[in-house]
Structure formats: structure tokens, C-alpha cells
Length: 125
Image 1 (cartoon, rainbow, N blue to C red):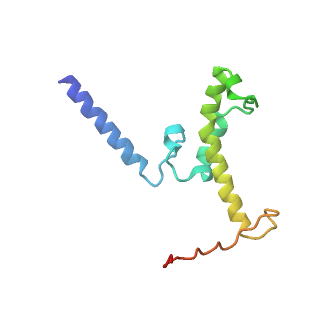
Image 2 (tube, rainbow, N blue to C red):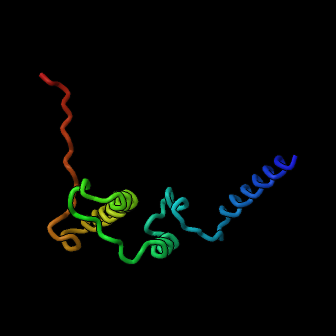
Image 3 (cartoon, rainbow, N blue to C red):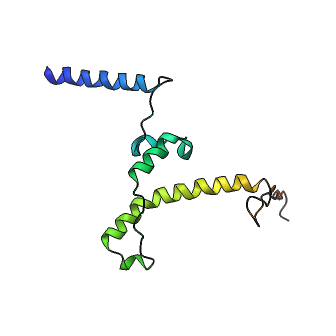
């Protein structure tokens, strides 16, 4: 009977936590799990504050030779950073694309414009 009571208590606590998290004045709590699917991304000051606190100020560099020459610690370090690096690069690329629409000033040499309209083939003979 105690187990059943404890389970119901935990469910009630979880429901209350979810209810409180949906309140308009709810405090944000950044973290790896919380920020994983959040659409705010780099625009969220809470996430950026959390990242600056948990990331070291200077990351040790990875060797620039073949991964076959890396130590197990180097491989682990790479795998831990790879996803964040890809996400960061993709976000910067989208920002640069938005600037490139303005003309060649913000992004020298590059400029975006309307793309080609592919021709539709209706008869192959």
C-alpha cells in the first residue's frame, strides 16, 4: 500500500511541476535536457548564460592528424563536441544567409538572389 501511495504522490508532484512550468511568469531553467528541443536556441539568454557557466573558457584542442592517432580521450572529446559544433555552424550559416540578402556589403563576395526555376519536361520525345 505504501508503494501505491508514493507513486500517486510522485505523479501529483510531476503534474504540479508541469502546471507551474506553463505559467506565463515561470522561471526558465536551462540545461542539456531542457534546451535540446527548444526552438529559442541561441536567442535565449537563459541558455547562453547556462552554456557560459558549464563550458570551460578554453577547450583543449584536438590533434589535427588522423583520428587513428588520437587517444581514447581525444575521441571522446570529439564526440562530445561534434553535435554542438554542427548546431552552432548551422545557426551561423542561417544568420549569414539573412545578411547576404541585403547585398554584398555585410558578406563580401557573396550575395543571394532568386534561384533558378527548373524547366518542367512534359514530353521526352
